[in-house]
Length: 111
Image 1 (cartoon, rainbow, N blue to C red):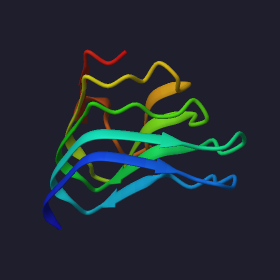
Image 2 (cartoon, rainbow, N blue to C red; image 1 turned 30 degrees about the vertical axis):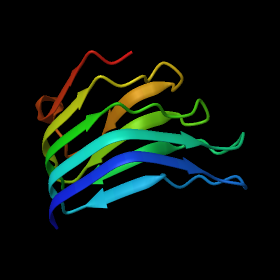
Image 3 (tube, rainbow, N blue to C red; image 1 turned 180 degrees about the horizontal axis):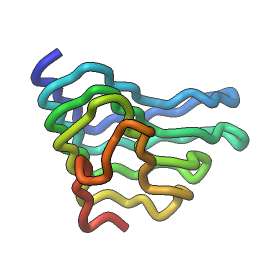
Image 4 (spheres, rainbow, N blue to C red; image 1 turned 180 degrees about the vertical axis):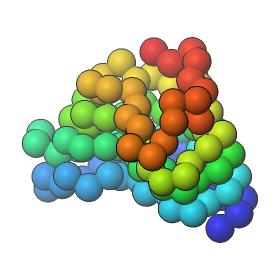
């Protein structure tokens, strides 16, 4: 997939769910502006997983406190930008998989 854009996504679940709210796999040119989620207690896990994603901009997001990690990078993801998000309610802003070097993620101005 090349050239994927999402704006103003608001997700909620009725039952406990450990799965990530969003999973992007093998995407080039991802743009995500404005994402929020509401999970029930016990629904921890990642809010979002990027696997083999190249050139992504993620901004304006506000995940629920039930998520333990906002963004997990896996595979050969690179050129990922995480900027201007309110991540104050999650335990960890991001997590890198074992094959993902730390320099592939640029993050700034995240609360």
